[in-house]
Image 1: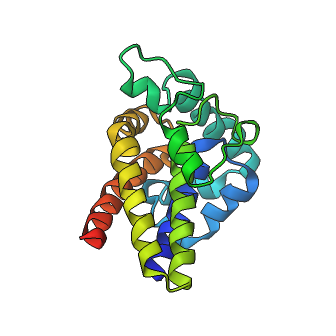
Image 2: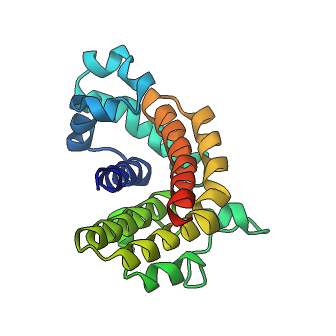
Length: 204
């Protein structure tokens, strides 16, 4: 139970960081939670995190870095990486939408400010959604539902996130101008790989 709760929280955190610029609430949550800071070792040692006012940190450091990584220099959409023409698929033909629909996951484009459902932050949010479904099945002691949703998680990781996200995250790590996004890229990549190994073992 503790493992699945941990997975729920990590997917939620990664999705939030990679989907939009931070706000004061999220920044303070990261700053003040020692457990979260363990995932961000470079950020944890970064003097500015303690010395600079939160508003200034957001406006002059973190949010410009997010825009640089997600809008200006890199493209955080699966279709860009997997299509031969490197176009972002913004319509219903996007392969991820079938899986989203099958598991009652709706993308709020206005809230997420994404142009397509295959944004890395949205795909991580879908994994969070699936982990919540697994947690509920576990609480209901429904073993067959637990196994079924674990299979879906593994399928989504292998058909989607693991096919392209490592390439985006490697680029993100090298382009990052702040330790927050440097660590976020590293953490997300390591977690996706280890979570896939975990699911392979669970499904055996």
